[in-house]
Image 1: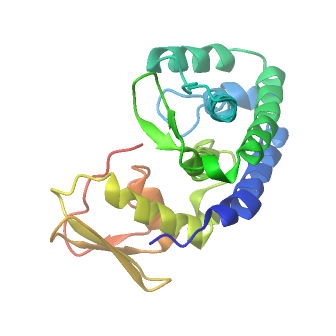
Image 2: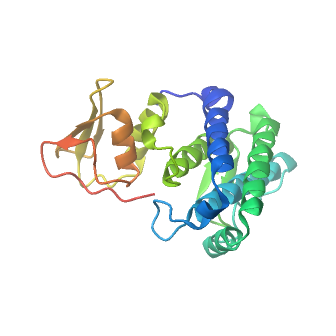
Image 3: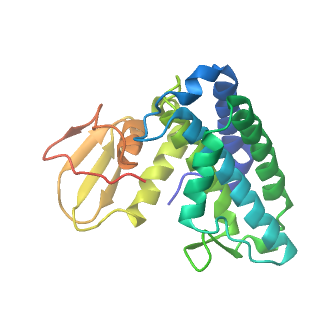
Length: 234
């Protein structure tokens, strides 16, 4: 069971995470936008463009729900990728302004959804994966916290909150391949998560485990009583 409630995310964690991201963005010199992020093939401009477009896409889909229309987040994966490339190529001030406006737009869209529509489903792409409206704040929190660290601009996963990191460990149970089992033991909070059956026990702080379970890093800060499992990124 997750440690977080939707109220926690909407009222506290997401606004705080967004403010931290905005502060980092405001402090970045224009020259840093073209520099590499920690994501292969993406500059910092790509990461910020993605965060802006993700917020716009979620806000648009939420407005569709309120208006009784099905509005997918993206027309297609190809269109999404192309839009990221296009925005990343814009001057830094354009990317920055687009991100700031999109964060406000998404907050307003989340606040506008009535309680009785939280279970309404939205589409990522037409005919593709669906998710409930109530999942949007959680999804956006993950996007902001993980990609803020991906910027490689002074903020890293060690600044994540314990509840957020714990939620990653919980959520990954449904997404990891259960054929290669292991146990993640967060020694700082004395809590374990089991994935699949058998396998080694991987030990470390909850934030180091969460970072590793996103497929990032090489297991720094972790120990394992067997071969460290390979985790695919997301």
